[in-house]
Length: 171
Image 1: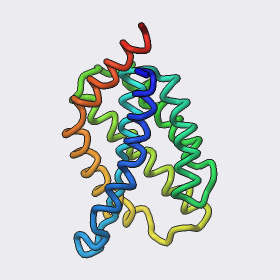
Image 2 (image 1 turned 90 degrees about the vertical axis):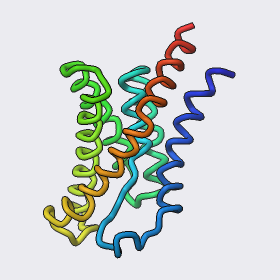
Image 3 (image 1 turned 45 degrees about the horizontal axis):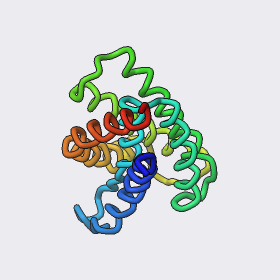
Image 4 (image 1 turned 120 degrees about the vertical axis):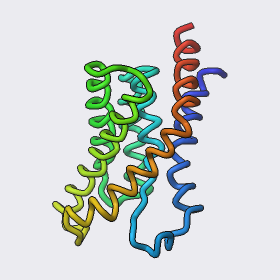
């Protein structure tokens, strides 16, 4: 039974992105900004740092595929780039210090990297009309701010949850 906690936590984080978009009004800030929650991505990065990187990469593939099916029209985009971001961030954590303050910058870098990759992919397949400057001011900045707030609110609970899960899985 205890081994179900990890999948349940990741499913809850997966749906928290959608729940936030559903609850938060689209017309906030007069429609000037696009705020994209990346709560699942942050949870995945916590998993990579405090649980197991290989498991996080597997969950990135699986939930990236589900994300592609449910939310995007491009199959394979999140399925390949979520694990890539997990891998890059896990390597950065090994090089830099592993405390929650430094992790906030590393995780925001991971979210920004994912957003930039998705933006460039949408530019490549001509699914967006905005340029890079508009993207940074309208979408990337507000997205990073929202996800920083999420990180500040949930970093301690997520860290302790993944550390407890690691002890459960190692027993």
